[in-house]
Length: 585
View 1: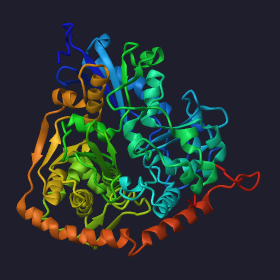
View 2: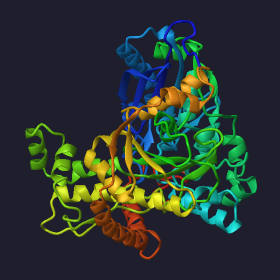
View 3: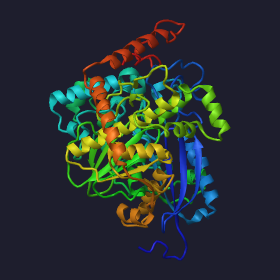
View 4: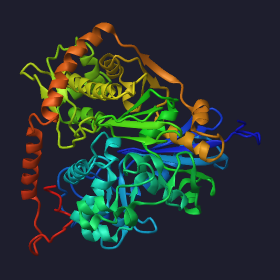
């Protein structure tokens, strides 16, 4: 297709909204060349302890455990700052930009009024936690998820197998039910329960369009319908009309235009008013075209703070513990499969922050290395199994295949001789074992993995990549872009702008070339097979009901935290109080 028929180059913008920052990239339509980027760390980051005083005032109090919120205006700030910075770095004329597309972490939910105003920006709601964005890693709705799963299994709901038999606490329905039951006043004031992926598109073009990806994977939308009112009423009578009153809306196909850039959004971004704004998408799923992985059997692992695994299949199969399978969830005409790990880079970051002594940080600095690079250099000298450890990668719970966010991390085998590099390597290996568990589940369910492609920030660690190749026994290739999701969004923007007929064609022209390739080393594969058997023993013992100590510890923790939460001076806590409610969920 002639994408420069008027004789000039055309460009698109992809914006990737991650867990801690938003990244914009300018991409040439003709060949996908990335010309400039801009990054903004969210001013309020992830809110886990208490609402920030600059937006909520000083009366909100401490948040219960397992909460993870964000401030929606931080996302607008990415449009105001990162997009113009990317255009400036690219050195292009903004008038040559023909489209913009975005992707988001999921499931990240925003309660809004009818015009799209976030509830926390409405008078009287700034100090109420339930009025804020619930980030994907908000796990305080596990109790609601458990009830959804139990009821769905008892009733034999036909949509449940599409999600591996379990609905996650991270998803739309569990979080929505938590909001209703813990702050019914905020629930009543909310007009729409909106995926952040769709809310940011609404901010750009003025139209609210639900994207087919999150509707299917996170919103239990299968075969053209949501769970029935009868099912919802059985959960809670006040939840009966959740779909019709809070959730349902026009669903947009991936790659279509949701609308066109408004004058206000044009002023924010410095882009031309009226350019195409693509239907929203999820960071993982949008990366598959960037990796040119749009055919069956090509598994893409987007590895960052967490990992999402996405793959197309020609046939529908039920895979235990998968996050979902959706018709056209990645590209039209194929079934899109998703699985994931709730913690990967987050685990490594937690360990380097809280588990590594100062002298290691000092030695890293003296060597001119970051702490991750330094620990990797030490760990890479070890023979497989030399550290004597095995770990479970559940520090943020388990997304696949157990779908249980009450689970927690574990390291077995520590002695007085254990050093930080030993634990660090064991944690690297644990995440690889988690991915192997997912790959095996797909294979055993008739969805074979033929290629393994890695995108995301963690591909820069060669030891980690080799471990993944050895543990899975698969040749691993990395995407030749450091901005996989943003590039994938840009590809969707080009389709929405009419520059390519579909995602496959755009991916072929604009997708990144492969980066480094890692081949399994036979002796390493054999060594890791022995360790993987030990991982699976622990995995099933703690994760499949043999010993529920992790759940009991969570309950004890909630009880202790609830006892420490402040009580308002004017008297007892009223029913539905948004600050304290949910401490025992």
